[in-house]
Length: 373
Image 1 (cartoon, rainbow, N blue to C red):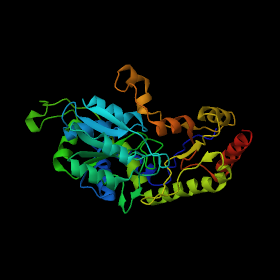
Image 2: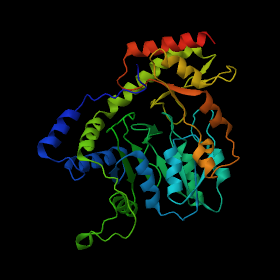
Image 3: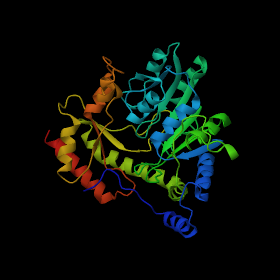
Image 4: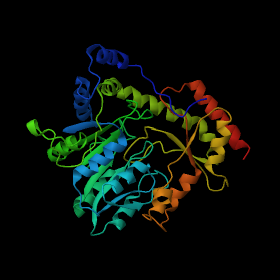
């Protein structure tokens, strides 16, 4: 099976992990945690950063740390991972959805403006699949309307919007270090901000809201145990040291697919290689079946799996999620672009560990499948 993702650990991961074992520093108190946080903040050009156990926890804690008014509205794309919407709901806030662009798959900025009401407190930017959201427009809108901005850059390690790295925008930003990300620690996440008050609140929330000194076991708020271990940080630090090579490798993989699969331009929409504000860094390599081909992505995924090629469907839109319908959070909402690419979109093996030989196998089988259609 050519899996959809295969990590590549070619740097100092083993060296740093062995150091953790040798010294006994394997918990969240180890020195690699602070090293990783400091170097990641410097890399992104943020003042403060805090590691957490995963990207979902990063979103939950970041939202809580902003202290938004209960019941207020947070605008986010419907085409995203469920963690984004869950975090808003779990914080006692109301998610308000916008559709995605047909070409970039990111949130439609013009729709954001239409959804702002007197009850709106924040906008959640989520960068999708390797192309960024048009950040400047949202930041300008947020400034005009005095709204907070949360930037979910989970899929965007090393990606730039114009000349600035993703994760450097908004009041608070988050990353994931899950195994399929450009930088992985197996599981893990990071919260970044330039605001000291937000940072101090994040530190409390991620660590059970312990008190200080003699009052350590007096807890003034409900917090989480979402700490990050020294072992994870050791791997993350080694990955961060190679981020430039990692991004170059991902771009090479993406460009190779584009070159070879362009023969199917009449049947497939390939991902954009660039926009006016960013170049694609191919967190995943997504394909969308064109409208005149009357099949859905699940049939292609099934056909490729029979050839030992693992593929995944695109995100399922938030407004169609069964749990949210059951909770009556979203009822009769429709977002045509998101619904379309959710039904017709899938992504193919694109992990750092994939070889040219494996890519060729993927390409040849996709071409064979579509020639029969």
